[in-house]
Length: 301
View (tube, rainbow, N blue to C red):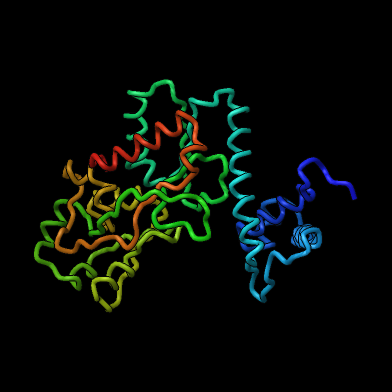
C-alpha cells in the first residue's frame, strides 16, 4: 500500500489513540469524539496492526499504555498542541498579541482577574482570554496555560511552581472574637461551610481536621458549590469557611474576614502554572506568563 509523504497511518487512528491515551478510557475518548466506544477500539486496533505493536494493555477496569504507547502519546500530545496553537493564531488573525489562560472560578475572581487588569495597564495591546471552570483543563488545547492546585496526573505539560498556600479557618470579626482561645473541638460546634465542587483536588474540612489530629465527628450543616459563596457566608457571620490565606489576602487585609491564625497549616500541595513550553507561546502569552510569575514573587498573591 502506498504511503503519504510523511509515512503516517490514517489521522483518524492517531486522533482516536491520542484521546484514549489522554483519558486512559475508550469510553471517555468516544464521548469526546462523538463516536461509539467500539469505533474507538476499531481505530486503535487498526493502528496497532499498522505499527505491529500493542499500544494498550487491556484490563478489566480500564486500559494502560504500553511503553510504545507512552512514547507515541508523548509525541502526539506535543504535536497536537502545536497544531492547535497555530490554528488558534490563524483564526484570531493575531499570532503575537494573544493569550488564553484558565483557572477555577475562585482563582479567577480572587486573583487572576485583578492581575490581568494590572497586566493590561502595561500591555494594553495584548488580547487576554480568561476561561474559568471548576473541572480539569487537561482537555483544553486552546489554552496557553492554566492555574492548578496540585500536579496534573498523567500530564506531559510542564508545571511551573507558583506558591504553597496556608489553610486556616476564616470567619466574621464578631465570630473570631467569640472563638478567641477556642479548641478544635470548639470549632466543630459552629457551622462549618463545606465546599463541594467537581474539582476534587481542593482540601476539605475533614482532611484539614485530620491533618491536625482531630478524629471526632464533624457537622455537615452547610454545603455550597462555590468558594465565593462560602466566603460570602463566612463574611456575614453564617459560619466558618476554610481559608486559603494568600488567595483571600485582600479580604483579610480589609478586615472583612478574620483568620484564626492558631489553626494555620501549610496546604498539602502547591499551586502550579501548567501549559506549553515557553518556545511554543506567543509573545503576548509569554509576557502574561512572566507577569503572573512576577506577581507571585512580588507578593500580590
